Amino acid sequence: MPLALAIPALAGLAFLVLPLAGLLIRAPWSTLPERLTAPGVLAALRLSLLTATLATGVCLLLGVPLAWVLARADFLGRRLVRALVTVPLVLPPVVGGVALLLVFGRRGLVGGWLDSAFGFTLPFTTAGVVVAEAFVAMPFLVISVEGALRGADARYEEAAATLGAGRWTAFRRVTLPLIAPGVAAGAVLCWARALGEFGATITFAGNFPGRTQTMPLAVYLALEQDLDAAIVLSLVLLVVSVAILAALRDKWVGVS
Amino acid sequence: MRRLIALGMTAVLALSGCSSSSDDDGSAAPAASGSTGAKGKLTVLAAASLTESFDLIGTQFEQLNPGVDVTFSYGGSAGLAQQITAGAPADVFAAASPATMRTVTEAGDAGGDPVTFVRNQLVIAVPKGNPKSVTSLAAMAKPDVKVALCAEQVPCGAAATKALAAAGVSITPVTQEQDVKSALAKVKLGEVDAALVYRTDAEAAAGEVDGVEFPESADAVNDYPIVALKNATNPSGASAFVTFVRSAQAQQVLAAAGFQQP
Image (cartoon, rainbow over the protein chains, first blue to last red):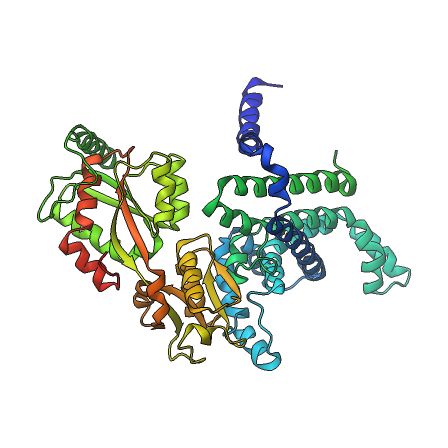
């Protein structure tokens, strides 16, 4: 390995890993058990896992078809649509939260109608957390799946069509299994992004323990009062994220 | 190049500010009028609720002391206190509660004894016209009224808890916001029907929200302490600013924003 590459590579690795090591070094190990079993921690963790999973579900349901349209359908303005789809990637999450409030809030375009027609409002509900997380995480899934679709050989679909399969059947029986690793990788990324979501969640869904207070929000509020508590919560989030990313990536994507 | 020279000059000014710090005493409070001879860069960390007033006071201070350049960083008091104890470069800290100030004094980061420079009281902030007719704390507890409170960890939340206890009212908010401005924002957006915020914040947003006074707020008055920090890069400027905040001129600005005299 040339030194000119090895040194910056090591520095890069250290830059990414050192802050995480800082959490481990500074963690209040002696009081860890009682802090972990504090009632708020488990509630926040459970809510985080639940909402991130639901958000990933929403993203799969909406994002895979969207990726298919972007990869396989030819239409005017496709480049614009693709750019729009990736906007949440670069948008500051707080801006995303404000935008969601303006549309799905109680006085928003869609939210106002939801409220008057069904008496249902999204902000301050667990569903609101899922919406915020899905909004921020969906581009990760769409990009991964679109990439997989572009890499997949379209001739298999054509062969299926010549054998009499409808387009829906071909998609379900041929395309989807073909791009499964890409979908899985996208879903894992999407899930991890949803798990770490903070800005859009606190702006759109607010902060209420047990209902909308996810782990990142709990970390932020703990920081206001007790640094050690914040470190413990951060540690839990870190362990969960690393474990899931490592386990799922190897298992589903076949990258080792 | 121009920027480089400016940078160099700022550094020189900051250094000269350092060297003339022999007469520095954070707790002394002479009546400030006219120039105090403060120079150089001055960084003030202040509670979010002070934003509008301190912006104005900072401009006045700069006008009185040509050569001084005040920068503000506003945020939740507790977060700012954590930043200071973690070594954030700052000259002055103005907190929204004695409890958050204690974080800084107990860590030994204060340059003197904090002094209370204003007090703030809570009001009920409601959307313009008060659609749900929220006129008391008890009215906030009705099930069809959506309420945003500050989280108990932050000063406005602690004050809200005190006021609610004094009134014997228990409220289940739909959200516990991390600072008073976010709670107010939820009222502005119409997402909640009421929030407990400082009178000063309600007045700053008078075009968008109405403030409803309630008697129990007298039991939950927040004292705002200010202190020059021990590791200030500009100690003379820091103590001059603290003195200026307590002067009649600055107190007028604070009173106009709805703050009370200590």
